[in-house]
Amino acid sequence: MHGTATAASLWNVGVIGAAVGFGYYDLGLILALCNFLVLALLTPLKHSPGAAAPGDQGALGEPTRAQAAAGEAGRAD
Image (tube, rainbow, N blue to C red):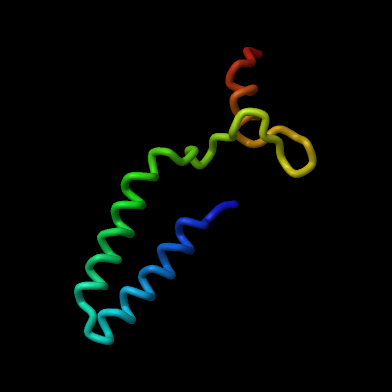
């Protein structure tokens, strides 16, 4: 699954907007801080965008781009 953090953040921003629109500024601030902290603290635990987890393969069993690039880098022509 890709993009779940982005989707969750968009929903959170929508709820923040609704909370502020209805005058619940304290709830909006709490949600904004929670969103920021979750993204800031959990991002280092996520795989880097081009890296594949060990044993990952593409949809048809071919190596992923990261695996192919690593194989090409080690080859001396």
